[in-house]
Length: 461
Length: 61
Image 1 (cartoon, helix red, strand yellow):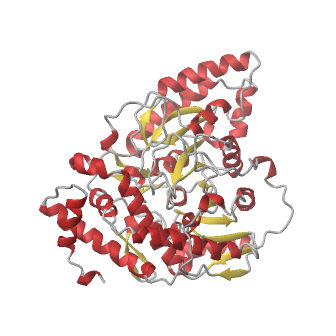
Image 2 (tube, rainbow over the protein chains, first blue to last red):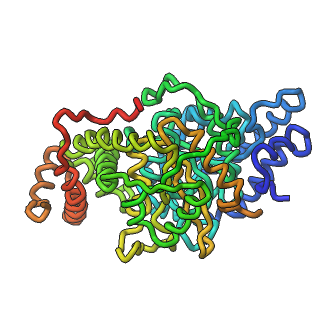
Image 3 (cartoon, one colour):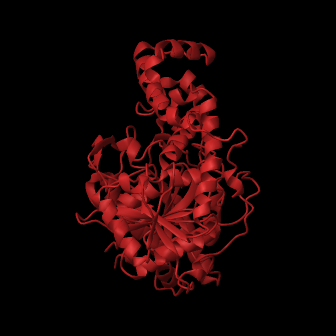
């Protein structure tokens, strides 16, 4: 039996009932990763020794009556920008490969440790998290399990590919401009980008501090909700974290009886979606009873503003290294990062001022609606190396454009769950389920309803 | 907007300010990147924000 066919709850139950040991589960996953990864290229670091040691300890604890948390004996992996004790945090870049190993796990990983999850390794990504395709020039392109000739999306490409391939029950990614939602969309898995500030980012390599989020990816909504609950909690060491109270969502799934008031985002979000993306969005709209279309006025400017903040803040992190060791930068990103260091200060300032203005406009929509929906990507996964995409007669650069429908929403910081839908040609496009701030329960409830009604893509193992 | 900008001169001055030494091919690539960003920035900079509009405090949603 392929353990990937089980939900987290079902696999955990097999462990607690002693049908399976954590050692058996871990060995099965490590062998599967070993067989698949040379082609898939999702893992850039394996933590096999740590995983085996964790498994032995977990089994002993279970046998002495300590069942740990709800993720006990569940294998997972993290984007290679989360600190993992005794491993080097690569952030997708050769630049960091000689740096000292991390001295402790990232805060999110510490939470998962307490819950008993088993870390198998660290996952491929775009260098510095600056990209939407995970065609990493140093560590190689990560492939899409739905079609190995195609991109996994990015920047959390390895995180989506590992889960879609059935090699991890879940993963952690980060999302600055769409880096969870884009690969989740293209690989056909669920991804949750919580409200900005909801989860601690401590111990993750920053890209754009004023836009970075962390979040989980999984094949089932109940899994996603369970992981999200384990990641919640106040971390005094993360000054960007909100003090909003913890709201455990996994027990709320399926409990909301009320009809959600749902609207489809038109305008920009339709204009830049190909026919397949429009079709999957229409399918989701019908299933959720969306009977309104609304427009996010100035969504294109929001994307521009997010781009300017990204260029400026992202570039500034690297100015010293760009001066001292330019030869060690990835060619795709070096001058992009440097250009960000040279912008007039008034540009990112205008972007931050516009952010507040735009946010107020967007939040007003939630006075009438519980949920807004839009495609997560303009199209399905492109072939690795494909430089451009064609959207409604316009030719756009692939690397810059895969996130264009995700960017305006992370710019505001809204919680979004991406629900994958199979396209006519057998690929996947995710639909963004967008809720008001801190309403992660609403976005997950909508995703759960879609999954229950077989609207979303299912992986068969 | 960017058609009127002398990007090589801009890059020369910014390189002095930021203490950077850039070879010719990198300057050329940088000019392309800056021109592209300037094109993206132009409509945003033209947006008539209220003069009392403050920066976003998104973490206090």
